[in-house]
Length: 309
Image (spheres, rainbow, N blue to C red):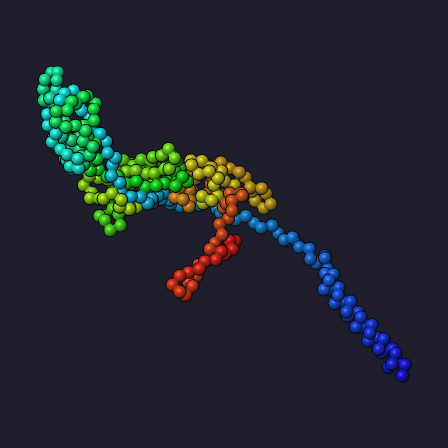
């Protein structure tokens, strides 16, 4: 009994403590490598698909722009002779048909008058009484009383302006009721900057520099086959979509003919049928991540990126 208590029990106690210490060391310094290996998903992530459906589209593009004065141009003499009278001065405002300069023609001798081709403002008057006048020579510069709207266009919006209407609607904050401007045209500068320009009606009172909103009605369709623009590679008249081939099959790449585009959805004229299932996003397209915004309690807000499923 004495041997049991003094020898055997202490030895067993030391063995148990040693085993426990070894187990703790293994857990701490020698983790199970097999369990650390990542396990693959049991199933692949499914690409989002949408069904081709019917709907209505209104392709209206709204641009920010401003009012600008039409460009000045030179008024030229149509005869050779000597100036006998100058009836205006720099800075004068004239009306259409108003007398500007009187010239005595040499051959045959007769009096010729130069009048304002339209209303505007005189500058850079080049002639004085007694001075010779020649055919094609500049008499003065006229800045017309006409105005136009000029709105900048993003390069990606140019394809939506292929069939630009002849009229647009102009809205001036704090100004008159919205009105139509005419002669709409797209112009591209040498540096590649694109803009839309249209003429302000003569009966509208406007001022250069006023900011405006320019609305262009580019097309409207009802009961048309429509798909998200994110599903189409291309977009100007034609494109490519990816049609689902069924369980486990690779999607079919299919060409489509496109119509009206409102920036979010596009009309499909040919290549798809109602009910077809297509990939919602072009392969390789980064799915947009949703952003959630919250009130910060101090009159502002903070936003964080959420998960897009």
